[in-house]
Every structure is written in C-alpha cells, then in structure tokens.
Image 1 (tube, rainbow, N blue to C red):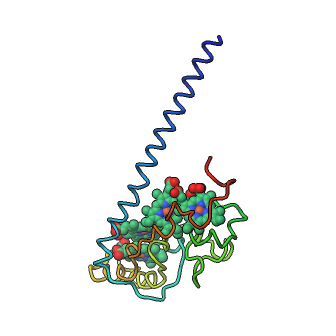
Image 2 (spheres, helix red, strand yellow):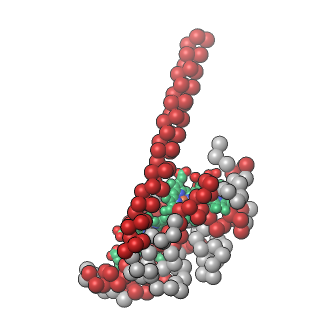
Image 3 (cartoon, protein in one colour):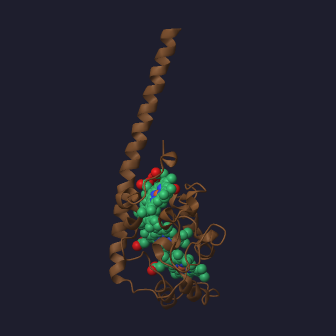
Length: 190
Ligand code: HEC
Ligand code: HEC
Ligand code: HEC
Ligand code: HEC
C-alpha cells in the first residue's frame, strides 16, 4: 500500500516537472519570437509608409472595434488586453504603473482613470498604432462604400500607422518592463 502510494507520488511529481519544463520551454521559445517577428513586420512599412496626420486624439478600443472587429477579438485573447486587470485597486491609480499598463497615460487625451476612460484600459490598439481620431473621421466618410477603390483604401490607410515607427515594444518591455518599478512581491507570478 505504502509502496504503491509512493510510486504514484513519483509519477505525479514526474509529470508535473515534465509539464512545467515543456510549458517553460514553449514560453521561452515564443516570447523572443513574437518580438522578432514584429520587428521585421515593422521595418518594411516604416520606410514606405507616410506619416499620418498630426494632432490626433485617442478614441479607445470600442470605436476601433466598430470597424475592426476581427482585430479586436484577436487582441482580446492576448495578455495586452489584461494589462490593467493584473493591477490591484491600489496600483490602478499609481502613476508609476499606468504608462505601461494603460493607453496614452500622461498625454492630453489619453488614459485618466477607469471611470473617465474605460476604453483606454490596458495595452490597446492606439499604443501600437498611435491615436486614431482622424483615421476614424476619414474612414467614416466612406462608410457607405461597399468596396473601397485603391485610392480610397490608400487615403484611409495613410491616416494611421500600420505600426508606430519607433520601437514601441521596447518602451514597455525593456529589462522585462520592470526596470523602473519592480513588480510588488504580492502580485508576482508564483
Ligand atoms: C469608420 C471605420 C473605421 C474606424 C472607426 C477605424 N478604422 Fe482602421 N481602417 C478602416 C478602413 C476602411 C481601413 C482600410 C483597410 C481596410 O479596409 O481594412 C483601415 C485601416 C487600418 C489600419 C491599417 C493601416 C495601414 O497602413 O495599412 C490600421 C492599423 C487601423 N485601421 C487601425 C485602427 C485603429 C487603431 C482604430 C481606432 C483608433 C481604427 N482603425 C478605427 C476603418 C476604420
Ligand atoms: C516600463 C513599463 C512598466 C511599468 C512602469 C510597470 N510595468 Fe508591470 N509589466 C510591464 C511589462 C512589459 C509586463 C510583462 C512582463 C512579461 O511578461 O515579460 C508587466 C507585467 C506586470 C504584471 C504581471 C505579472 C508579472 O510580474 O509578469 C504585474 C502584476 C505588473 N506588471 C504590475 C505592475 C505594477 C504594480 C507596476 C507599478 C508599480 C508596474 N507593473 C509598472 C511593464 C511595466
Ligand atoms: C502590441 C501592439 C498592437 C496592439 C495592441 C494592436 N495592434 Fe494592430 N497591429 C500590430 C502589428 C504589429 C500589426 C502588423 C503590422 C504589419 O503587418 O506590418 C498590426 C496590424 C493591424 C491592422 C492591419 C491589418 C491589415 O491587414 O492591414 C489593423 C486594422 C489593426 N492592427 C487594428 C488593431 C486594432 C483595432 C487593435 C485593438 C483592438 C490593435 N490593432 C491592437 C500591433 C498591435
Ligand atoms: C504600453 C506598454 C506596452 C507596449 C507598447 C507593448 N507591450 Fe507587450 N505587454 C505589456 C504588459 C503590461 C504586458 C503584461 C500584461 C499581463 O500580464 O496581463 C505585456 C505582455 C506581452 C506579452 C505576453 C508575455 C507573456 O507572459 O505571455 C508579449 C509576448 C508581448 N507583451 C509582446 C509585445 C510586443 C511584440 C510589442 C510590440 C509590438 C508589445 N508587447 C508592446 C506592455 C506593453
């Protein structure tokens, strides 16, 4: 009985270790890959792409989703969409955390607080594409058009970055993101 139980234990511990190693290996193999791919994705259009009009304001994920529902659903499944939820109430009002865990914090039309700017929570569309009010405005003028002509398509695309030209990932992910402010111990992943 005891021998049987201890053998079972060994099997359980073994499989936990195996699962742990496999998961860790997968996470490690995926994380740098994601960054490398988007670096490549970014270089080409940054050179070819004209800068969008200046002075755009943040409109928030809900209004982007109105026209880009597929992208919205994809984003919803990423950790970026959870970046505000991982902060507890205390840190959801801490300026030290918000520039990397919300959208446009510190800018005139960016994140203020959860009640005032509910569509700018977390790392969202406009963190990577830049603020999009004029993009929305121009796109709306074609809302009655079923299929955009190449000229119309270009006119709309030229109003927003396919990806901001600066290395936007690094602004938050440098030294694993917590160079300036360490993750408080009680919030760290076990
Ligand atoms: C009124 C509809 C509408 C809204 C609102 C809208 N878009 Fe677009 N967007 C378009 C259209 C149309 C295109 C052209 C390509 C296409 O048909 O998908 C486009 C293209 C894009 C592109 C590709 C740019 C390129 O250079 O290829 C990005 C990125 C984008 N939108 C992001 C956003 C973001 C972020 C928001 C919210 C701030 C947003 N859009 C809001 C209609 C819209
Ligand atoms: C310079 C940008 C930056 C700042 C400032 C920042 N974070 Fe983060 N935070 C990140 C990034 C990037 C990640 C994702 C790390 C990863 O998965 O590699 C993250 C992840 C987290 C996580 C998920 C668990 C973990 O450790 O991975 C928590 C919780 C967290 N941060 C809390 C905070 C709190 C609380 C503050 C303020 C005291 C803060 N962060 C400030 C960028 C930042
Ligand atoms: C972490 C950064 C990031 C976030 C957050 C993000 N995107 Fe993107 N998005 C990208 C990158 C990178 C590409 C690919 C650019 C390329 O192909 O060169 C892209 C491409 C797009 C395109 C162009 C697709 C095409 O086929 O032309 C649209 C539209 C778009 N995103 C909309 C959104 C919307 C809407 C949201 C929010 C719900 C969002 N993105 C959130 C980084 C991001
Ligand atoms: C505004 C800050 C910000 C920007 C810009 C940003 N990230 Fe993040 N990223 C975060 C935070 C915060 C988290 C952690 C969210 C959580 O744990 O819920 C995260 C999580 C991630 C994760 C998930 C890590 C894991 O543990 O699974 C990946 C991968 C990632 N980011 C890649 C990128 C890439 C690639 C870009 C650029 C295209 C980018 N990020 C841009 C803040 C940012």
